[in-house]
Image (tube, rainbow, N blue to C red; front, side, top):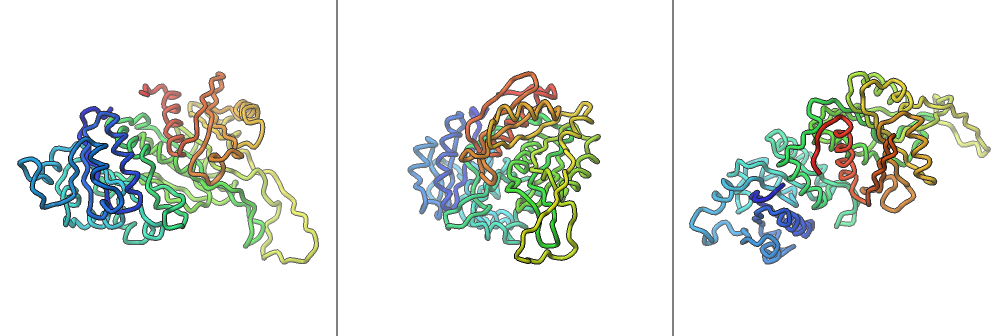
Length: 402
């Protein structure tokens, strides 16, 4: 897919620079012609010799070095590469790109090139959420620059949050998808639900679950990447919706029911990845319930079963459900698939390390009504989502390539 493609990997000064070596290695393994440009700060984290060894090409980091070839090197690279990927992309390089600043080799190439540019942001979560960084990302997207990630998780500074650089496999996958033009769902409308619903007890408290929404948001990104017009019906989460995806925010299961059923007739694909509460309190107290020191009984009433209702109403739509189980995974998932009349069911055992709520990874099986089953090893939720979108495309009769 990348044979003979000229890819420039830009490496900037962040601890995630060590992951850039794996990006270069993977691109080289796919037979791309890989060139590397590093900022001086990046060379403090990983050596040019490492990158030269992995890319089999000279590494560029000095703007005014004597040219290795007889040309103006930053202009020659800018004109002849097929794509540029900056990984990691620090807040500093994003600001330079947004303002058009060119004060070193890499930023000069980025200003001069007309090739597609991909950036994989990597920074502390506070820096990522700073209004200046968010405004810069919006501006870069509007110019057509493709943003990969970032992921959420533990960071080198010791904190936990979003701003972590996407994994090398996801970055390379984004490039391969771009060059193969995998717009399998172009012209299709897709709806995905995400997050855990919250059922109020009183103005302060609610009944909820441990869902982070990561799986649903990853699916929304994968649908959008595949060209689908994507709507994300989201229960409360701390996540930012993928660029180009329309989010409808809800809190309760009843609100999600109304939103999904209202949109269902115009959809081609619906993926129910949200963790919807099965029950809600029969009465929501108007004022905060006070502590009395005695036992209290709360009556619960069932919420409508959104997936089952969609299974009864579906016409030509592809309907995908999820089964998050703690025991008897396959038996429970098979029963749910038949009962809910879905076209594909994603099953996972949330007791397994790397597959539970809030984890950046998942371990899933795809189950089909005809008895087929596809088991996947542990992988990022975005990778799971991309596999899921491929299977949905096949169910729609779209020719896909491995």
